[in-house]
Length: 319
Image (cartoon, rainbow, N blue to C red; front, top):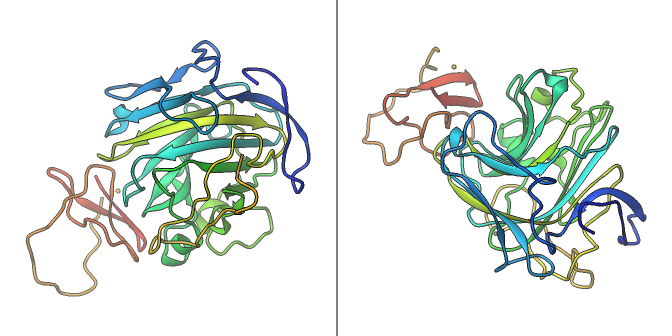
């Protein structure tokens, strides 16, 4: 099913569709068809073909992402549908998402303007979307918004799917389960999508790239396998059997489980609300990282020479 139109046999609840692009990397990594993507700079990040772990077969794509924006690196394709976009990838993360903002999928989006991206990644330890042109997030990073998303399990293969619609819709599934906080449709009244829905922009990705981008010091290794890019949803089936997975206890969001009978194949600093006693910080947040906000429990002291700049009640950033 390498670099060509393919028919995928899907679950009974998901009809058979014609995929535009699919890749299981069993014939290797064709760098001309799936080139490295690292806008502006690349310092430390790498992409390799890995034969030591895979969702199916023996090969997968390994991305070792370095810290900081220039540590970013992605691999992907510009072969995307002109209409609705559905993406399915099996992925494995070596480290959990932290309070810092990161991306593991990025999509150039001309609808936002030149050199702007629609990004999927994490912040506040949950999965989220980020629109580069206005820095909006889906969900809102409020306590309610954070609870409406979920953490990304680590150390095992996960089926991650999403849909970007021509009407501006966003839908997301993890191991076949819809994630309410990562859903935005016209007229759906998602209470946790106020930031996202304030814009009339309808994304129109011109490419899909898988990898790592950190806006702080976070590093991570991700593996990707059995990727499908289509004009219709294909579901998790179509690959080899993988063990059931679930969210770790105590992580934010809803608990996700798989079936046991069908395996998924800144400039003004915000004044403090109350008087507090100064203490020596136990940790520091890197440049671009979140440093305060309602519901935020991470590092609130920025690494020198940066300071914590107030953006909203729910978000402040080291700048």
